[in-house]
Every structure is written in C-alpha cells, then in structure tokens.
Length: 302
Image (cartoon, rainbow, N blue to C red):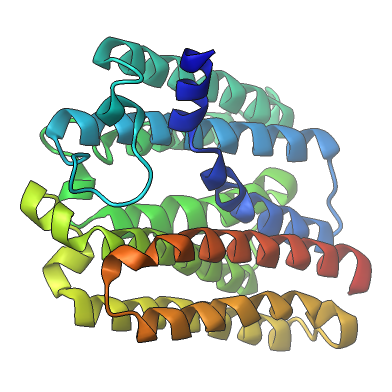
C-alpha cells in the first residue's frame, strides 16, 4: 500500500487539471467551428494526462538524482527525495509512462487522421515524440533545459500553443488566426504556475545550480514577470472575446480571473517566498476553472 501511495504521490495528481486546460480550450474552439468528436476529446485528455505523469515522474527522478530535491526544498517531499521510491523504480516508471503516452498518442492521431492523411499523422507523431522528450529532459540528464532557464519557453510551447492549436487541428485540420489568442493565454498561465513554483524555490534552486528564469532575474523582477504573465493572459482572452463578439453569459468564463487577480495581490504582498506554496494550488485550479468555464461558455452560452 505504501508503494501505491508513493506512485500516486510521484504522479502529482494536483498537476493534472492544469495539464488538460489546453485540451478543454482547444476542444471548445473546435466545437465553435462546428466540429465535435467525443472519441478525439477523450483520447486527447488521456494522452495529455500521461504526458504530464511522464513529466512528473521524470522531474522527481531528475531533481532527486541531481540533489535539487533536498532538505532545503520547500513544498511537498518527492518520492525519490523521501526514499519512498528508488532510482531504478522511478526510472522504470518514467519509461513505462512514456510508452503509454506514445501508444495513446498513436491511437489519438489515427482517430484524427486515419491512413488517408499520412503526412499529418507522421507530423503529429513527431510532435508526440517531442512532447515525451520535453517531459523527460526538463530535469533529466546533463543538458536538462529546466536547469538553463528554458523551462518557461517549453511550457509555453507545449502546454499553450501545441495543446490548444494542436487540439483544434486534430478536429478541424485548420487554424483560425484568432485562436492563437486563447492558446497564448493558456500558455502564459501555465508559465505563471511554473514561475510561481520557481519563486517559491528561488533560494534552494540557486544553491543547487538550477538556473531558472527567477534565479536569473532575482525575486523582485521575478514577481513583476509573474504579474506580466497573468495580466497578459487576461488581455489575450479579452481581445479574443471582442473579436469573437462574445457577449452576455458567454463571458462568464472571465469570472475565473477574479481569484487570479487576488492571487496577484497575494504575491505582491508576500515577503517570504516559502509561503507562496498554497498559491500554487490556487493558480493551477483557477486556470483549470477558466478553461472549463470557457468550454461551457462556447458550447452553451455563445
């Protein structure tokens, strides 16, 4: 039973709602264009969840091996750090989750493109492989990009642009320029969650040699960067709402920015980075609530 709890802990279930936010927004935009497919929707969710689990296992393994997850680290203890799972066990978990992700990706892409659109199928399979690579290389290996200040860029690309635009394309085989705005917004919010994590861990990351954007900028500039990310996301959604001529109840999804703006105030008032940990859950769930409300607004109120 302890092992089961350890694997569940390593999977970091609280990160999963955030990971599917891009799928919800992309599906909503595809539905708005007149395309619906429950099979695509389900397999998109399954694939994204396993990508996230792969990333979480790899992050636990990579930071544990490098010693970044140590007694100084704030937040919940990780599986390798605490000794609940060994290196070999966690490495096996990374490989297994990556294989499941790839199989799920193939099923999803075959449902979307079949054998008639082989070019698209191959292209998206390559993107799927890139997703697995990105999930693992964030903290694993000597060239881990999360230790070189590149985590923000990859999160923006994979959780924002690829998640939203890629999902839309699976349904529609087309991309409307205005759909880039919600994609950028979700990407910025996901980067905001990562940045908040890095704000919390700025001291321990710096000592461990994990050079995040926050470590590079310092705490003060890291906070202003945080405000920029979240306020820009709001601006993108507002601009999309105007261009899409959303009015009345279709704007209900913007309510989700209320806790996000309260979160900005909490970060502004914070004097001790270690106390930012509770804000991580708030921001991640607020982003998920935003995506879910956007999905409902598009399908039921527009």
